[in-house]
Length: 598
Image 1 (cartoon, rainbow, N blue to C red):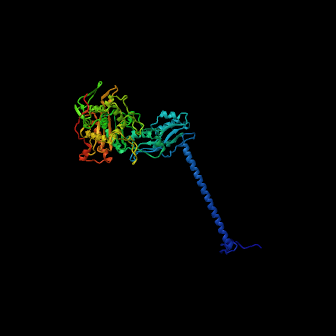
Image 2 (spheres, rainbow, N blue to C red):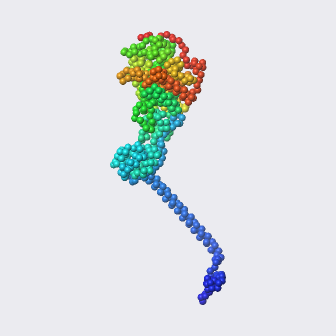
């Protein structure tokens, strides 16, 4: 029998009553069985575990795809932007990423940076991929204003697959070219050499070419080492001293309207060069073709140095044992040599002792001393002092001395007062250092010597002769031609040198002078030597028209010493202390003539 009961909805509609509870449609499920209680949680656990596994697989898949896309992106950037310009389709301009510098730094003795490398980008093109060369050229020259329009257009129209457009872009230039978005243009990763001190150390540090090869100075001498090692090359230079020497040298060159100048400071006990300045100079970032500016007068130039050579002549005489301090020589009249005459600028017209010959810078007396010792001994001494061969200093720009061949007596006579033998200022500085440091020649070096290392050296004169040379050089500053080099408290000793330059007609030009001065301090126990030289100075009102070393070079050396002394740790002393005077003065009377007048 079928169930004829009305539905709950019908009962509520027709009877107007609330429907009764009906077990066929319960509001609450019946109580589950024990098996059902455990089956349901197990099903939910399996579902949750499956969901977590799916999520994990999805995350791994996403990560793999992300890494794959990143790798492809990097490869595309490298291939299209930083490639060598192969057939890579349309270039997409993008920034060149930085690369480690491969060329080592150059630093001064205190670690100050003299040369370093920066990562840069260089611009090149594949002309076959440049769609519109005219439009591309117009855009490029609007950004890189130094580009030549016709030259650039010619490159972009060529049949080549690789043409350089501009090397070593600045970051701003790189950004601006990047914004142009020109197809067929590419950036090449390179490095650019920078010189923080620019002109100040240009002649020593040198510079590199467009491909970062060393072309001058330390950059050239140590090219292989700078390329192969990350360790910086440390020089003996002190940029503080370099700055002071340049400033004072430039002031003198300007005042006396010289063609140029040279200046050095050397540690006489080690041979280290603490400052080396040559004027005029140049900017190593944009090397000039002006040979005069790039010419290193300290190392490449060779000159007849004039009366500074009397230091060696006196060392020759005293070290030979044939001549003593108290000996005197006839300087009453000139010496005739063929059609030439050797005379003194301000002759005393009397017999002069060895100290007087040095103090008054007598050419006549110097010649007589040299002849007394002889030609073979003179040549041997010059060779020991390193004046007959190129300096060992670590630069490619080193001049070769001009040595007389054959070395006759007339050469001996002229070399006695600094003519007839041409040497470089760095040779001169090394040799004078040996003459005053106790008699040992230390090779000149531009590399800082490590503390405690053995310093190479060769004895050239006895310690006793060296002591006598120091006393003679002190006499020049206290009583002689170098009085304007005095720097109170620093006990300066020195020697003037004024040489007439060789003229184009085979003789000497009276008005074309080379004025130089070498100064050591403190002269009782020398530590440093200053050498300054002005090429063709012109006298002025202040010097009463004189352009000789006593007026031009000696005061320059004095100014330098006053400023560098404190930086070098040299404490001023009382120059009148009895022990100081006893160690630096000469007290003797003439012992009589040793060479007849002729």
